[in-house]
Image (cartoon, rainbow, N blue to C red):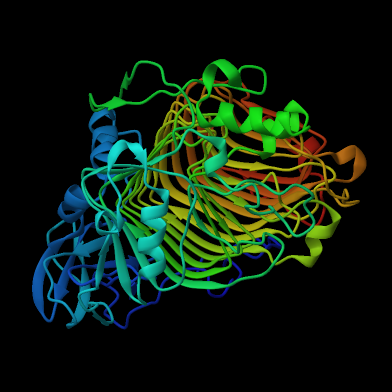
Length: 623
């Protein structure tokens, strides 16, 4: 993980925030030589008996690196770009994005992962990686990593336990029997077919494989998902129903730990949550599902499983708002699991959220496809009060946030662990409320996130941070860099205390401390055609609720969007450019102090700098 130790960012100006920018090892090579990649590693459980996935951190100076070459036992396997053309569902969309960038406006990203395939079982391999310059020359080897493939796992085929796979019969019991019979290290296999099922419960040391041509289809009946599923936080009052796939204690108020769970395959997990409109055609000419966008007034005509579960809760005496906001099943919910790998499968049509990870440790999401647009609350993947996340090579087209981080609500969240240590890279974000999102549940702090080398076209927002005056905590030590964004529908970057969730249940004690976003660095990002705001900051300076320590460096905007800032202090905007405003001022700033602007275009009027940068402890640099 890039965020093992958070260290201050070395800067010429005396800015008092701590950011994790020293993320790479400096190799002892001549100053004129191309640097080798740093921290080559195998992500958690990212291997089996035939393949091993490798990732690495790019060097600090990577402008002249065009590719990376991977060697196994000294023999060249290939380059990361060509490899990702084969294994990453995001890569073809990233390539199409840059094909459309005929003006060369956008920041170019680097691909820093490789999937070594066709390996022998139970065999150790020694891997190294070399940087490749634009001139074709290679760097020295990276420090090596040695990884052994797993032994061939015992396979528990669900058909041998009575599963029909005909899309009509309910296969819950047969699949669960296969899971229960599975010995440590085994694989439960869903071969080609459509397996209708209610809630399934995984255990430790297991692989669930949904094979190519297989679909795990959620039952449309509410009674197939036990009501005793899970509670969101220890102080939450509502017990939510189980998801389609679970690693949870059967008693939601008891603690149970799990470890070493893999969910993989080239098949599909379908939540059967909503009816759908006609497919849309995406930017590559491929069909994408479009689920009916619903709410708590329209679920009866729009929903399938969502309708059944809300109606069941209302029949039991719950009001419609809470039933809709709390009693729909997600696709996957794992709690208290150490070491998780999700790989290869496609996610569609959840009744509620997509993949939820609660109080987990070391979770990897790689090479998956999320097609949940425009299912209400249809997030891609969520992490709450968890430590260690790696999200790479994924395609997101979602009905809510694509990658979301949460950390509890209100005053009681101070007793919880923070949400921390995440690395998000080489993903393609299409529809969704935000690419990378912190909040709105920020109570125990969301911290130490690196998002880099991502591409987005059509999300509502890029980096989205949302909280309230009574949520507490916030997000800090976040880097969002080396990425390209196009066609955001609302804001390219937003940091707000003015968030309202119409489905939220306020069953927690409000914090007396407002949420805060601080020590956030955005660097080397291109934004084209933002429809709303380029940068939006909403603090509450009248009640002494400030965001602070925001750094924007080398960020360029093309389009009509402006920056609207209120309630921000002690922050820097360096080489931030707006290309379609002429001499007009694109900065709308109120209620803010200590803002420094250097080499911004168009140049800020002197009066604006004087009014905004009045914090005497932060000297302005010359324009």
